[in-house]
Image 1 (cartoon, protein in one colour):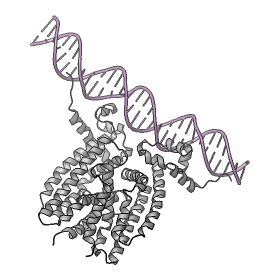
Image 2: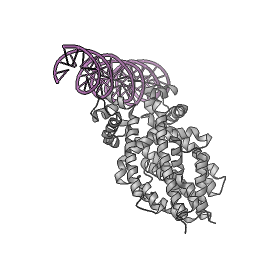
Image 3: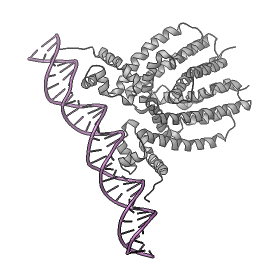
Image 4: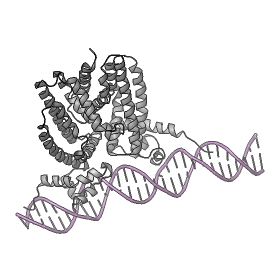
Length: 197
Length: 197
DNA sequence: TATTAATGACTGATGGTCGGTCATTAATAA
DNA sequence: TTATTAATGACCGACCATCAGTCATTAATA
């Protein structure tokens, strides 16, 4: 009977239009009004699509991360070596091409640490579980290939946590000069231990 | 002259008085007015001692963490085994006795991830560097004792990051059922690899 | 009386709401 | 086939409550 917009698509459009804003400003300095006017709509309309600022981060990360996962999936096919696969995972945390994504990712973790919003937590869980599982598969493949020792499976989650932990440390402090180097050193050292001789 | 209060002590008192408030409420829901009235002072006075809400978290964490470090330092003397020492470090992230401290710690990381306040970053750096160094010393001692292999030193920071990374994953998601178990499994697995046979 | 601590009213900005408007479309009447 | 009416939902922005942060004033002490 009336104008019907594709709500799902419009949510995406608004979120994507706000990307630069989120990348360039700290979450705290970014107001709903700014986001709305940047997206070319009114504040009232924004609230027709999102419950709050946090949900926009959620939507934006969702879009960008799944896009990146697609790329990652392809890139993972380029190598058979388990260590190289893990390094492809680690790339996310220092590569120039993912710097924007990382900014959104940091906002997201920050929100999750202080706002125990159930919806957020569920999404964050799915996110982690997906990566944990992905990591486990890669490690398991390496074990099955006889490339790494069977015990490796017990540190699959740990390796992912290590990578993310170093990223957070380097994001919030200056105690890590060169994240890429630090990540590679750690991965190399662990692999020297778990690789079958 | 006139009334002279010990500004340093009063900052401590205000911060400590706000402890329960920070532990029980999410950072977002906690207002300056609530904090002030809880501490029995006016909002204006609060601003005589702190620049903002974030600085109170900073002060509070500072007090609580250095107190806990003292306890940790003592506890570390109780064992010579490197693995046990690492587990004492990990305890922080799941023990009942540190649950309040962890809430403040989460707020602090959250602030650090979104607010690139220089002062905060410096403190956070000192914090990490201290723990990284502490970790390195423990690992180095283990190497010197012939308990673990020399290469272990390259994952000293990594082990700390792994522990913290798992903590963050478990705090923001439900993809880790039992953090204590997960931490111990990871530590045990790594030590099985780095221990000198 | 000089100095400092403490206060709380005040301001500007922000998050979020809500009633109203308007373009679009479907249905109906001419 | 065309004009008119009714219904819908997207959109807006004025409005409200709340909060961070300021500052003129007051109270207390040396």
